[in-house]
Image 1: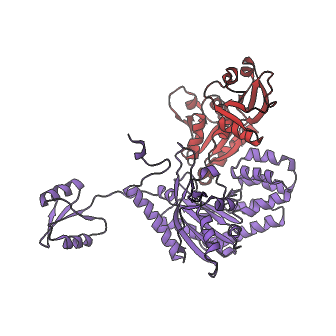
Image 2: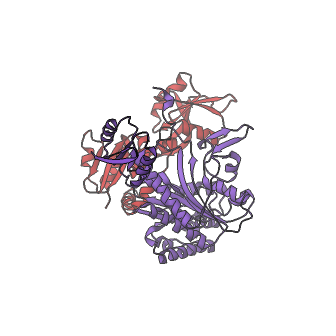
Image 3: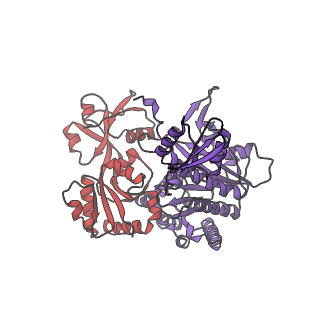
Length: 209
Length: 390
C-alpha cells in the first residue's frame, strides 16, 4: 500500500484531528511527542502527518505534495484552490459573523460602509451576494480593534463563543457562514490512490457518524 | 538588481534537458495526431473577449490576460484552444466535407493569483474532431488520447471517462431551479460528500436523489457503471452508452487504461456528452482533458457536433525522466580556408555530438575542447582533416 501524506493544520485542529485518529485506532504517539519535526509517521497505519499552517495545507494539497489535508472551511473560503473537499469532520465548529459596535445600525444608512476583516475575500463575496458595495479593509491582527478606533463600521470574523466580541463592545448581527474542519484531497491523488484514500475515509466516517 | 531582468510571474525559461524533454513530448504527440489524419491549425494569440464569453467558458474574467486594442475592443490572450478552433470551423471551414480533423500545438494563458506557483502559460497539444456525433468519434478521441500518452513513454496513467448527461438526467428528474443546479454541480465537482448530502435532504426518498447521493463516490473501474442507479430513461441511456464505449475499448485492448467517474462534470459549460481526463503518477492534477461539445460551434452560427481533447505538454514532461545534458564529443577547428569542409565534417557525426570551434588557433581550440569535456578534436587545415584524441 502506498503511504499517504496528510497535511494537518497546527493548533486546535491538530488536537481534534489526533483525537479523531486515536478513536480510529491510529497510534499518534510520535505526532504527540513534543519534537520540532514537521513530518511524523502514524506507526500502525501507512500515513504520515505533515504539520503546517492553515493556508499552507491548501497549497500542499493543491500541488499534490500532500495527498490529503485537514483544514477549516474558513481557510478554504478565503483562499480557495483546486482539490476535492470531501468530508465535513464535524469538529472545529464556529461561524463567520458580521459584528458591529453595540447598538449601531449597520444597514440603516445610505452611506458607504467600511468592514474590516482578516478574510477580505469572504467579506467581499458576502456583500457582493447581497448586492451591496462596501469597502473592505484587510487587518492582520485583532480585528475587533478596527471599529473601536473608528476605522470601520463593522467586522467579519470567526466567532466561537462571542466572548471577545462582547468584551470589546461588539455584537454579532448576522451569520455569514458556518465553519468546521474539512478533509480535502488532491484531485490526482484521489484518482491514483483511490483504494488507500477510501480506506482512510471509511475509517473516518465510521467514527464521526 | 534590475527587477525587469527576470521572467514575468508564472512564466519560465526552459533550458537544455528540460527543453529537450518538453519538445520530445510535443513531437511524439503531434506525430500521433498526424498519423491519424489530423491537420494542424494555428490561431492568433489574442481573441475577442466577447467571443470567449459567448462560448460559455467558465474562466473568471479576472483570470484572463486582457489587452485593449487600437479600436478600443477588449482582447484576451487565448484562454482556451477549443473555442478558437470552433470559431475557425464555424467561420472558415464551412465548405469542407465533415468530419474535420484538426490539431493544434499552442499556448493558453492564465492570470491567476500571484505567489501560488501557478503557470501563466500552458502549452497544449490537442485535437478537435468536428462534425460527427456518433460513438465512433468519442472512441477515436479517447484512443487517440491513450496513443498520445503511450507515445510520450508515460507508464502509470489512466483516462477517466464521465458523461455530462448522467448528472443532468438526475437533476432534471428533481425539477430544480438553475441556481440550485449550479450549487449541486459545484459540490459534485468538488466531491464534497457531506455538503452534497445535506443539500439533497429535502428530496430524500426520490429515486433520482438516491442516485445523486451515490455520485461523489462513483468513480473507479467499469463496475461503477453497474453500481450507478438509473432512476429514469435518460440516465439509463447514458449508462448504456458508457458501457458500450467501454466494451469497444476493452475489445481494442485498452481496458487497463480506462476508468470512470460519473461525478466528473466539467464545469466548462460547453461540454454536452462524454467527458474525460487523464491522470498520471507524478502529476498533481490532470495531464489531459477533453470531451464532447455539441453546442459550442452552434454559438458561432454552425450547428455541428464536435469532440476533442487537449494535452498539457509540461505536465506530461514533468512525469518523465529528463534526458541528461551531454557535452559534445567532437570539436572541429578549421583554418580560414576550410570553412566548407569543416561544416561537412561536423555533419558526418551523429546529430548534436559535434560542433565547430571559434578559437583563433589550434592550441586554443584544444583548450576549448578540453574545457567543454569533448573527447575528440578534429583539425581541418587546407581542407585536410586530422584527428586529435583528448
